[in-house]
Length: 64
Image 1 (cartoon, one colour):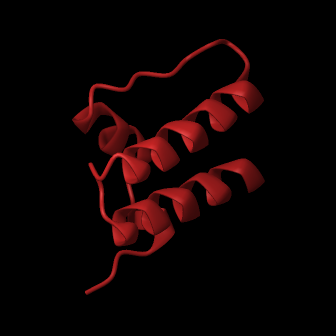
Image 2 (cartoon, helix red, strand yellow; image 1 turned 180 degrees about the vertical axis):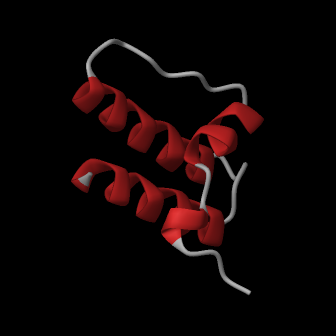
Image 3 (tube, one colour; image 1 turned 135 degrees about the vertical axis):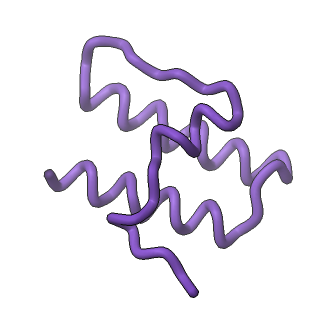
């Protein structure tokens, strides 16, 4: 069963890889998170499905 973007815990996902992002600038944080997600994929640490789920959750967070 596929997770919906609102079921995906983006913070837990990032913490699983030792990533804690907080700059005090919410918009800047989202840009850094997107970069980190793409880098995890490029390095082969996460698969395409995880990347798509994480980016969908990130997009949802940007619109809130």
